[in-house]
Length: 112
Image 1: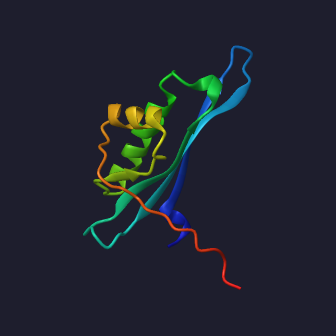
Image 2: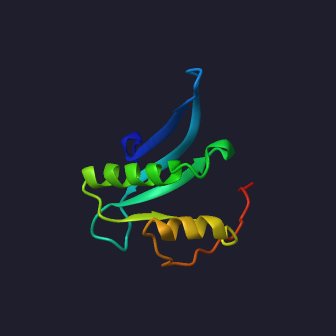
């Protein structure tokens, strides 16, 4: 995997006094998986600052990510969301995502 498979998009808001502030970001990954014949797009992280929420920034970042992936010939976007983050689940569903998998984790520690 090389650096050109990772991409970060940012949202900047400019205040009335012309100060710029990072409002949010989305981290993206293009990757090949065993179960698909083509690359998939993976949303690694999506964050919008508390003061910038409910302004459409998260949706704009997702839409920009979708456009980015399409430009690279990718037809599927995937992401993980914490099991108990119901607000995020509703947000993703409102943006066209569906619940398709269950993820498991096991902590194994570092080798000695």
